[in-house]
Picture (tube, rainbow, N blue to C red):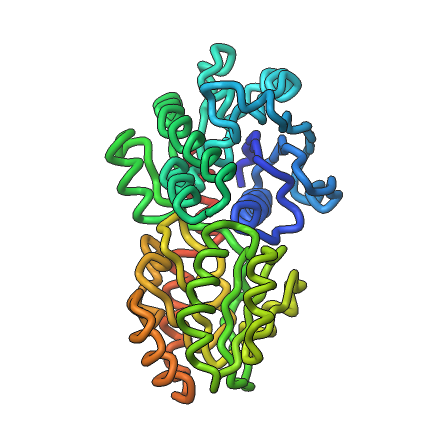
Length: 376
């Protein structure tokens, strides 16, 4: 097999792979390495520790300090981009002539730098970022955060035009593929689904316990808003059912709200195995969002490890997995009706085969890594 070389610029240290964006980065670089691509990883440090695990898959790993703080806000360039400018990064990119994979718009500060003009440049679009930040602004009630999200929305919308300097744009959902291919051309846009941890065969727990689970990063405005909606409008009105809300760093408002209800349990910061166990034994996994953005890792995890999955249309948009979920409306009364219907309805095991076929087709790490390799 022919060996190829690739620079990857990651917006954060991609190990451990414990939240959305870094999960895609980590399992992508692992799959690329397993398919004979020598990786030079350039990664920004942002609240996470350096990891020797990355050296198993990368020929070299460079770490860079992110320039956070007020001074990085004083620019027309988005904060998530401007805070990742680093001359050492540019110097290291200039030291070889290999293609460059920019992970997210976050890492694209040097995308149009004159010294990289002749390089093959690929951008992994983790989101339509200005739309994502617009949603964050709508979902937060903190005035300072709202102002920041609105400002960042405007800056991201303007900065996104830099993608014209990319040779290839890799969209991770069909929704985002439609957006980027229309704006920047079908010739340079590809749909490469999310990379994530998957075993060879989906197997579900034979034990099903009568509880409903919602999981996600409980510190983000999007998930805080979704959790509040479910608690206030659904869980509070179904005291006959036990609910579990679990995820990273639950916001204080959620902690206080959940404390008001005897039928709701909060499990903060579960370990990976614990989270899988909770997903596997739940009678119902409920996935709800009021914001379309990328592909939700929680959706893949639920379909890989859980039984009945109730999800609204915005949750599954662009994932290709719509037929594997029971779609619910955004109306609380109708959601309650669906919960009461499916709570004690047995999960049909023939659904497993449907899941395996779709996952093997779409979310196949080796297949998708080879698609990237073909671009190099």
